[in-house]
Image 1 (cartoon, rainbow, N blue to C red):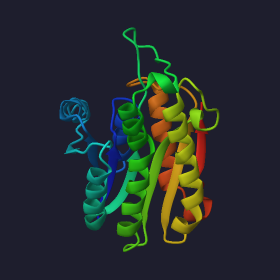
Image 2 (cartoon, rainbow, N blue to C red):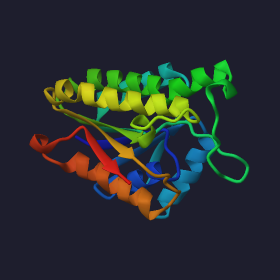
Image 3 (cartoon, rainbow, N blue to C red):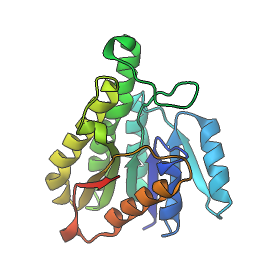
Length: 223
């Protein structure tokens, strides 16, 4: 059976590096985000290495779209998922923009939690249903140190990453019993596009994918 890597919330850093790493192991690559223009730009970069990617527009702010995408792909392939969606805001100089709780609108809070956490829960649920039919598959999620050390200036992403750790740790044993590996990398530094750090994280995701079942872990830390 063909092996497929689906990246939800694919971007030019960890997402693209992980796509390139898994493509080198003969995985078919599916890139997904809400911005088709960005997906085409990532696909063009991969094509320079002879990698062809399938592009899927799906907005993590709409959990129903993520549910449909994962459910469809889990039926047809031995699927590995990387949930890489998350919301960080930057100022005009490209620096992280601190925002207190009251700096956010209600709509921003709802959207951020959908992207940072709710759609990850939905993806894991859909993946478990589909992967259980084959008793194999992998679900990886990009975590972050805000999940361990929350900041009042970055509260939605802090809550999201804390939820990711709880989701991954809580589901590790029951999914392992079904032959499904769920794991997260808690990334403790900002990762630039096309950087050695992005490739380091991609290598760790591949190590988690290729590790024998008896050595599976639910969390790795980088940075």
